[in-house]
Image (tube, rainbow, N blue to C red; front, side, top):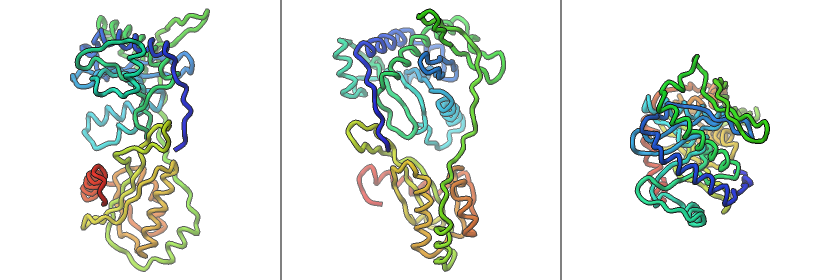
Length: 349
């Protein structure tokens, strides 16, 4: 993973953020708002819209989530769909948002505590300690940059005002037509920011899947060594339950695991972990390596994720292997649970 240069906030910027969070916490707007009551705040510096939702109605997590732009909004809808369908999902790995939450002291990192000490702030009790994190797809929730601190401060300040208005008028966020979002847009004329209320539409483009191009010679080489067809396979590609931090200042990321299971017996054919940004290509190369090593192709391949289906579609067709998209992978799910269990105890598979 590439290293990202970080622009650290000043102590004054942290002070502004903590003040905004404390003021937001005091009104306890989760008493009358839900995460489905979504509204937008446009970033004065980038013009990107942050879509805000309040958490706390269930009495478990108390927070303001600010989903960033189109990708953030897509992640929000995936999360809401998961809540309704109870499907197994990796939604926590896919969120693109800034979160201001309120937890307990033991949930804070030493970096958080140092800032609080420098600001001479005091917090007491359960769910009172502000925690600020950036959720970025594929990465561990991390500390905020200067730009993120500035925008989250604005989001908290404006969210408080909107929440109090919503308390008096619970139809405030009802759109005049489907697909529109209530958004506060900054007017920066004359230096001071004035916020304008607008109903805006956010285009959500269909998600494409990058399909790596493999050399024809690679496919030809595999075909030349195949001697027979074997059993059915279950195949999946998913995030690992642990993170990797290559250097001290890097943001830890979740590597990918590709897992290949024999469907009839549940035996592990092979698995592979990678932090390569081009993990799709590595996944396909691993698939071909297994076939080359065994000199055998599977009779059928079962996958449950569309991305796996599209990645394997062309190769499966060229090799004459039937590819099926199914709801569940029973044997692979068992193996995945066992793999995660052994990884957590540093055992082999």
